[in-house]
Amino acid sequence: MSASQTKPGRPREFDPDDALEQAMRVFWAKGYEGASLTDLTEAMGITRSSMYAAFGNKDELFQRVVERYTEGPASYGFRALSEPTAREVAQSILRGAAAASTSRETPHGCLGVQAALSVGNNGLAAQKVLIDWRQDGTARLEARFLRARAEGDLPETEDPRTLATYITTVAYGIAVQAATGKSEAELRLVADMAMNAASWSHD
Image (cartoon, rainbow, N blue to C red):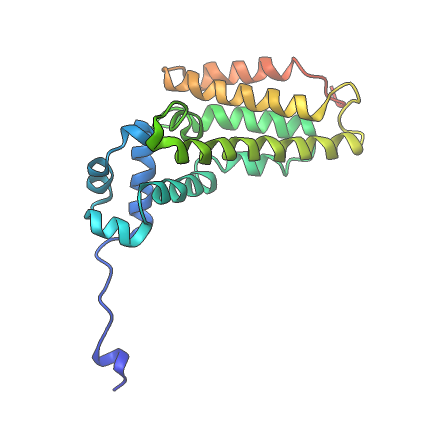
């Protein structure tokens, strides 16, 4: 009998994936500073020592949460970049923001906007994580619009950087309105209105 059979490793006392999901919901609902360690560990169903061992300190846990949020609820943004036209890319982002920020399955609004806009010294690291996250999203969208213009899919009159900033600004605004109680239907109308403010080659 092998050593691994005679001395089996101690099984994990919790599901790390589920624990991270619960931490994401706490940060999303309460913000970085509003989420206490007690809030987090109770939602995750683990002790503080287990949290530190599995995810590191609060800042490191928050970084993991943002990664999970990007790959999960906010993944519509990355999927949108694969749409065939610039117009469809923008429309997919705005409608995706309306749907994701009003889902009944998660807190309303956008974790990437709400979690660390205004923080004290203890939240500066989290604030920077989200600033970088938002800037990365805008940069990716700008690159996609640059490609669209090079392919003749976006008029020369539209500046890719300004257009990317505009679309992301509206998307984040949609998320803020969702947090105040606006419905997906109402926010889709806002998305459609925003689309009409830009020029698209296939209009």
